[in-house]
Image (cartoon, rainbow, N blue to C red; front, side, top):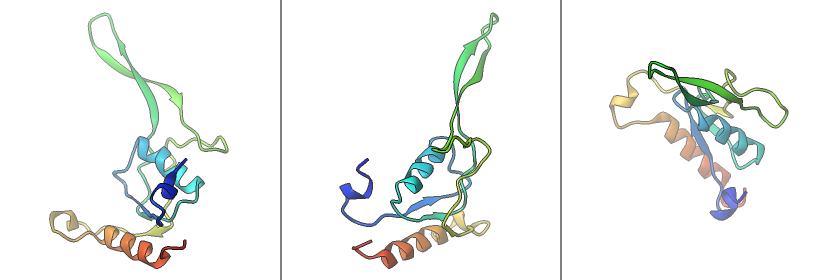
Length: 116
């Protein structure tokens, strides 16, 4: 519940297609609490709680047990969390030192100032 109030500064959240599982509900909560803009690419849309189930031969399966929803009851699984500022990272950029998503997030953060 503290969110950005614990920092007493504005915040932004960076997500991309590699953000999955708990990043789905974290992004949903961040947006619901209006903590700041979400920058980058939508999350993967993968979140469902699973548990191990062992078969007689020792094989272990992961079986879904809990469906995760947003505050309106809509499922998060297979529904990527959207972004407020879309920034597609160019193919191959991750092999260098540039990160356009992070640069845009910093720009968004600086544009919010201290009072937002």
